[in-house]
Length: 256
Ligand code: NDP
Image (cartoon, rainbow, N blue to C red; front, side, top):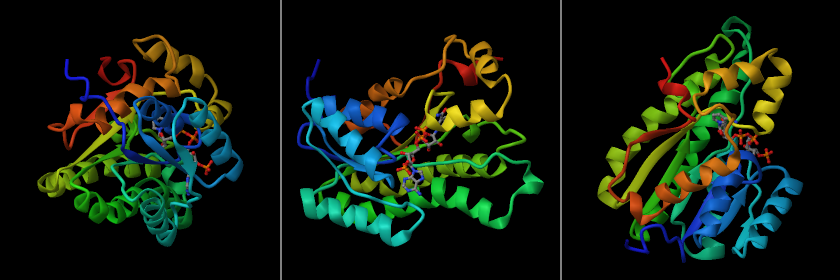
């Protein structure tokens, strides 16, 4: 096999929400494949801790604080990455959150918070990364969707709208930027054990066991389950893969 297919040596990867959960799982995978990682989150303590974990793997890693709800912060993230490293090869738009409510209970502010955190942020960071990637000869953008990119749920109107939007945005950017050698793909995680779902499990009775029962693999996913797919979508191995939405869900979405 061609050993360079999955090699990320010399590549610079920015991971929003890379300071914990799925984002850190992907960052660790790419670090092990040789990439330099920029961890981009709000929480300074989590940022520092994630950088330490990545450096312990032998990776070059640093943190740039970002609030993806703010356009200037997203643009500064990409500009500061360029200042520090001179290039950006991989952008993982992973930062996200949810507000669980019946549709009629959302305020407009809550709706915008979810849409802006999960969807507009990915647009803004990709928009800012496009020119530097193009000038650098190409790039890889990985957007994080959800099972709510496919399904609906009574508590997930805003979240599902944002994650459905992620898939359609991914397809459109993929078609626009293929000529610039920028591949844009989405990962749709199933139910993964992170801070986000720990909160959901506290709020929703029986969630833990219903996910176990509904997932053919018979377990919740772990952040480390995202290391391999991140490396694939960041590496030369996926150079002819673009506009795809790949489920990483232990079979959750294909069980009849
Ligand atoms: P976490 O809560 O562990 O991670 C969310 C990350 O997003 C944190 O690192 C957080 O950083 C960051 N973040 C949130 N809002 C902002 C903001 N405004 N600016 C900067 N960073 C922000 O949860 P997960 O790892 O589970 O979630 C990661 C992604 O995976 C999300 O997009 C989520 O929707 C998606 N997902 C998760 C699933 C699961 O089962 N866990 C299933 C499907 C999709 P900080 O703490 O510093 O604010």
